Image (cartoon, rainbow, N blue to C red; front, side):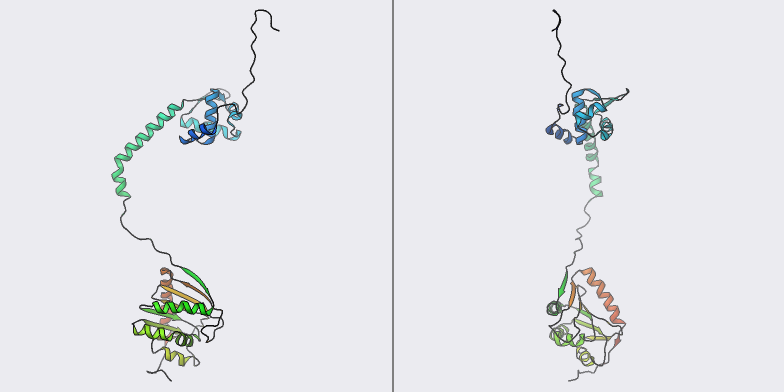
Amino acid sequence: MSPPGMTTFLSLPPRAPGDVPINADRIRKLMDHGLTEYQARVYLTLLDLGTATASQVTPHARVPRTRIYATMSQLHEKGLVEIIPETPLRYRAVPFVRYLAKTVGELRERAVALERNVEAIGKEFAVVGEVAPEEKGRFEAIYGRRNARERLIKMYESAKSSWIGIGTTRSPGRVMRGFGDFITDGAAKGVRFRFAFPVTPENLKDVQKLAKYAEIRSVDFYVPMYMHVVDAREFIMSHPIPDDDSFYRGDDICIWTDDKALAQAISNMMENAWKVGRTVDTPAEPPR
């Protein structure tokens, strides 16, 4: 009991962490104006506490102690916090309207500068041409001789001007017997066919038959696969498994692409290989 005539003052408990007016909506609004979440939490805490040390702000703002001084410094740079040079340092929130007024002024100055330079900037970054981006080609892995043959048939049918191929000693027989009709038709339409194989006594007859419609060169190097390029736009390379005379049976492994850059590069290399080959003497008419 208090003595008569004395007023009793009840001491209120200190504000518990989390009682400051920090909520998701207020944090979001501050972040909309350029603050990070930590900056928004610290600023809202200072608005409530008025003036405080970093250690007093930390539990209310719920910002890691290791980040509190950096966050205070960032808010000071933005003009939202004043630093009171005491020991320890104390911090005071600056009215947010000052920050908004400063931001409005900076944006207005930038808008004026942009408007003044819009024509020059537009000319500097104007569209100077309608150059289409280089197209990427397709790439496929093909398994089985029958599937490889079907792809080759499509390539033969699409040939417009040139065909160059390099193959194994078995290739001349497969090429003429398996694709002879396409080569005959293509040659009649003006397609230039060129092939390079290791020419041997065993495949000479097939080479002579093919030479009626194509330019043949003999190469000394062993090629365990065949490669063909049509019109420098499609390329196929296949490993014949086994390397025999069958048109359909085989576990051949192929890669095919219509990527123009790759097909052109392979075409150039194959043409160089063809040029270093030896010409093959063939009779005017293929032997019967």
